[in-house]
Image (cartoon, rainbow, N blue to C red; front, side):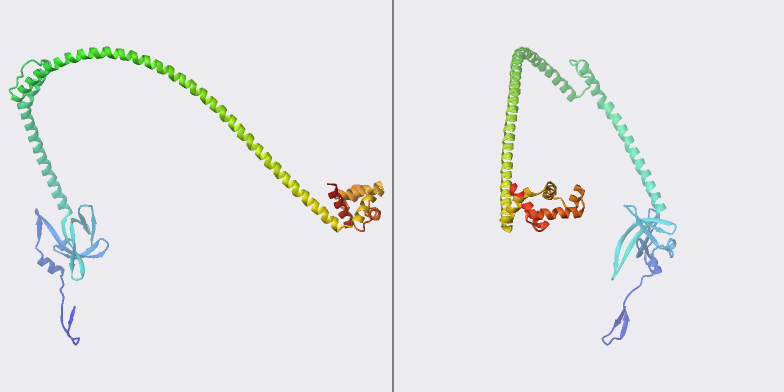
Length: 357
């Protein structure tokens, strides 16, 4: 980094560089139990790939170091060589590096195997000492105690053979306690006999009470069944009454609706008749009605077809006549009934039909 004066003149350079040779000369060679340790300052080139200065570069010349982890250690791979160690972050100025300490994988596994062998030897020695101690204390203390306990089980009144104060006191306590327990057992036997007698009487009374309770329960069940049957009958009668009431209300509503519809239709019909009567001359309509009797049977048949709503084509087809014949009869019908057109004839027919209803 250049150092500038106030006028911009370069007056010096500030900085330093650590080369591989410098790092090797300044770094003390470390050993762990006769195996060489490699120290390094690494720069990250890509994910899990590093290069840098090494204390012993024999295995890392121009080779990228790849790192991984087994959960406990970091694994380093440089070409065909594998190492195991640890890393820690290192900050120099504004640059970030990592310091690494590595041991060859073969050396690490060899040391690990030696440690396991030493551990197994120590565990074997401890186990052997434990077995010897257990045998000694068993013969010295446990065997006499077991013999006395077996004797106590077979003959409680016999004195103990082992010369152990606590065991002697325990035997004396058991003997005195045995006598007290025997006396208590006799008392409990006597009390038990009395309780058995009382229990027999109570059992008889309980059986009688259970029989009475069973009879009462049967009677109660019968009464419940009768009550349930009555309730079902009452419920059915109530449902029938409600259904009948609903049907009655529904019929009444339908009758009221029908009456309203009839009244509405009657009023509408009366208004329609009145309106049509207003648009038709009463004298002409009366002449139309009176002259119906003057029609011949043929003319009356055609007139009835008009009343039924038949069209001209339908009348011709139904009577088997020609169109000219129908026109001839229409002319006679119009003349006798006092109408001029087919529309006026149909209007009078509709008015006559409404008057009949």
